[in-house]
Length: 293
Image (cartoon, helix red, strand yellow):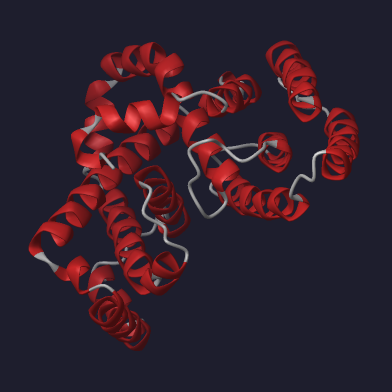
């Protein structure tokens, strides 16, 4: 309860400063981290809370926030606030290993923010639909889409041993990882090579072959069922879905460059934190047959 009180106070504070001044103050984050560490230490002594759990989730959140910062979807303050909240959050009732708090917070913030911002996205997209549609078919978009989807396929396939060892099956976590990989590997360079597909495959042939071989052998040895037509069909469906959503988000954000300045992410992260304490995410997943447990 004391940790949640720290989250609530600094969630309200950072929401206010982000809405009013479009800033998340470093002083507030440092103070929140100090009080949060003290609160976690107190609960560890009194209630025997798992301190390692908080540290691991903080590391996972830092990696997620860093990727979103490098891909220019978040500002530095947003990434630091996300890391702080993930570090402070307790284990969700719907345990989704690994990094349960970090992934739960990201998924709830993303979904909650999408619902809140949906009217603005629809309005701007409707007004500028012709320009956006044209941008989707530009050569640089095709090049970026190839690299983004290729990165998702490769890493989700090659990292299967880690997924299996960590018993990572929650669809929200898997989709989050695929979305982050897409943003990391997506290339939006202005210069487009004429034969970029063949050049990429030629330069990375050994790495690609090794990743596919490792992924196939570990699936065959550890989980032959994952190579069934049904399992591969579900994998392909998730891949198409996240690719479509990712390229759409990229196109809209790149077209409306002022979104990063217009959208205050602190309140969205705070709302995502509050939603993480509820049954919002598992309920939403149960409503979607494709991702039902």
